[in-house]
Amino acid sequence: MASKLTRVAIVSDDKCKPKKCRQECKKSCPVVRTGKLCIEVTPDSRLAFISETLCIGCGICPKKCPFGAITIINLPTNLESQVTHRYSANSFKVHRLPTPRPGQVLGLVGTNDYFTKLLEDDLKAVVKPQLVRPLALTPDKSVRYLLQRGSAKSNRDVNLLSGGELQRFAIGTVCVQNADIYMFDEPSSYLDVKQRLSAGRMIRSLLDVTNYVIVVEHDLSVLDYLSDYICVLYGQPAVYGVVTLPYSVREGINIFLDGHIPTENLRFRDESLTFRVSEGTDEFQADKARAFTYPKMEKTLGDFKLRIDAGDFTDSEILVMMGENGTGKTSFCRLLAGALKPDSAKKVPDMRVSLKPQTITPKFEGTVRQLFFKRIKQAFLSPQFQTDVVKPLKLDDFIDQEVKNLSGGELQRVAIVMALGLPADIYLIDEPSAYLDSEQRIIAARVIKRFIMSVKKTAFIVEHDFLMATYLADRVIVFDGQPGIDAHANAPESLLTGCNKFLKNLDVTFRRDPTNFRPRINKLNSQLDQEQKLSGNYIAHEKGTPKHQDRKKGRENKHHRRLLQASINGVLGVQKRNGKCRSGGAHEMSGTEDDGGEDSEEPDD
Image (cartoon, rainbow, N blue to C red; front, side, top):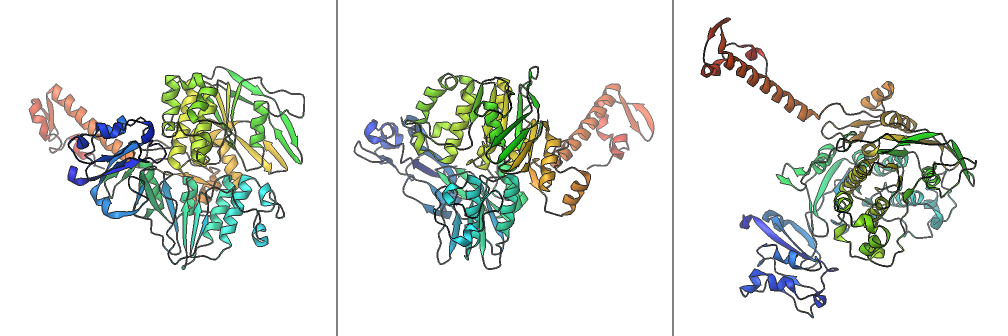
């Protein structure tokens, strides 16, 4: 086994502090004790150095390091010859690179922190960055015209635009340029479902036999809609990343969700990810004994008017708010939280509310651990909260880092923990999937659903990732109307009814993949799209088990029936042969099926 594996030693530049430790890694290394320089470090060193050729992979030094700065992993040796780039010794490295094809959209799916840069060579590349806030404040007039007319005005300054408007501006800025390679990093952030599909159509309009389009997208429904083929990225964030060979869109996304690459016979995740709508509610008995109502309300904010129908909610329930940007979803959350007052004298239920805002601005001076101890100390010290919330979100990787130095995804996870850690009757969570990669979104959805069912409280969630929204929702509140001018919030409806109403407004249909039930967008005016629109089923719900599991289950059931029949016949001492019955022992039953028994007439699958 040792000859088939290559050791990879990673020393974190941020965590390794030789001047503040006793060099425990070097003192505990068995190879160093034999006189070999496997680990080289002194109190005056900036970083420890680990020789990957001498390392035996004992795993002692990662446990002894007081700062958790060392990671030792084993990789297949065949990957060692396919290293594309490594920043320095004992640092992150990339194996292989995706290969774009002219005239097609290459989609990249995987976890964050694998690689973000492109070796440009002699090609002109235009990149739409992940973060759109730091964009230049003086755009060209022709680019300014690309801002969608309606909610965004073409003569507004860029520094006054919202997140969704900035995202559309960034996409438009890239699309109007003439380049060989177009790269889009998370083009769906801040956009609602309708805008995501419009952005997808605009990106696909760039396709030409002479250029290449690469898209990094964590909304799997949008990635499915955008891409012509997929490369999966797997590995360990900040340690190593591997790019697979190209796959078809459906196969590539399903491989990522399954966590197993059949062509390489490699499993990179312990469990598969599925999206059954009913999943997650069986572990806890939902307590819906207590029901609450909120009145019919109206709220005017400048030129915008929001009308809210009266509704109700119960404990152990998650209500997802669906609608376009600018239809008042965040304002509805603020009304429930008491931050806004309705125009009339009607009052919302007086309940404790915990709010995770849409925009996260870190102002705390200190580390993440200090923040938790100051704001949610009781919950943070609870073993159940640690097991259900903190550990699944993997906050231990950066819990001792300064809050102001965290990335967008790390800040999002901290904000989710902060919101769930406060004792409340209603949890208002605004866009929990922002800045999270595909795997982190699924984990966050499971954490939220499990927590709400466990504490038997209510959650109102604003979410534009349709896959995550359908996974979370027990019921939905559909927002319609004219964005930014006049909007209407319907009363809570069932998931199927609400999704049908929402998708009918968008003129979009979804089907479900038979393998893992993930929602997939139908191509406009395709046969399935037209059939679902005629039947009124804008979202197909799963029925039974996945196809491959259903066939397997059918074969197993048939096999069990045969075994049961053979056992009964053996006990009775009866064997059928040529239409006659005669006594026989159980040892004669081995020829039952071949001799024309009843089961022999049943065809195999």
